Image (cartoon, rainbow, N blue to C red; front, side, top):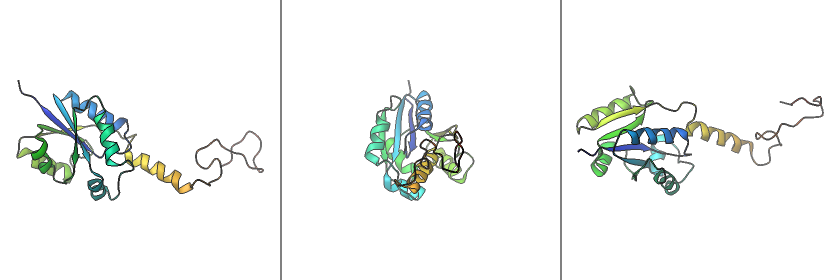
Length: 167
């Protein structure tokens, strides 16, 4: 019987339920799942900034997920070059790639070597970009911001009536 190897690439920064969902769904569609963890340098090239969590830690997190059989550090932008090293039968991506120029290129490239591209629903309500924005907002307020401005319990000012919350 044929053994299907799946490949699920990602930065996997600030690991969240969207990442877990992709890995869980990917594993249900193959016999052996390799998670491709994008290197810090590749993430910087692709997204314009380095991940918050360093590669060695992201790799350890992804390797520890029960749905993942192996983890591979992705160090080149060309997915076909990665395929030559890993030799997977199917690649899994979020459906935010579907119908985009990069998704169409991915499909065309992998069609030449018989690799299927499978899209999974992108988790709209949680993303590393949103988490990073929230962290940046908190950091911008700084450690000396007044209590209440960093999401702590609201405070009232002398002009505020008791029991109301100041803006």
